[in-house]
Image (cartoon, rainbow, N blue to C red; front, side, top):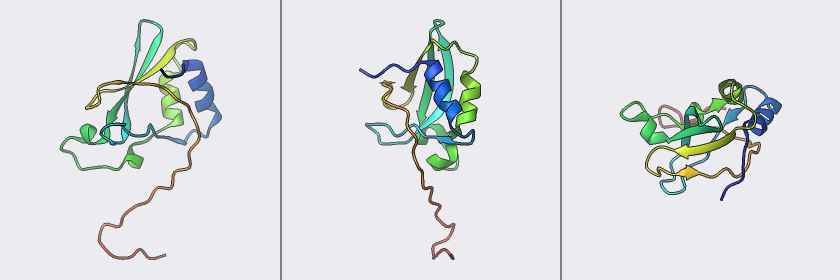
Length: 126
């Protein structure tokens, strides 16, 4: 069983980091595909669901994108959740191949070193 995360705790954390801070949700345990933000829904006046989607399922037949290009920012998520009551519980779920609830573990700062491959093979000039 996961730990409880309230809207207030999430608002507090998001408000404590730079607005342009990118958010990553990790990857699916079974398919190993990155999880990308999809939408939020508020149900039963007490649960804020944050729906995630696997990277490949989100893109369908579109041009493939990397996970780091699809990360939302702290200010984007904060703007989405600011209207919901502080006492509401935040719940996460993946809507695609795993189709299961995701238990909250922790919020932490992560340093991401985003690498870009050149369009053509060869070396990158430094």
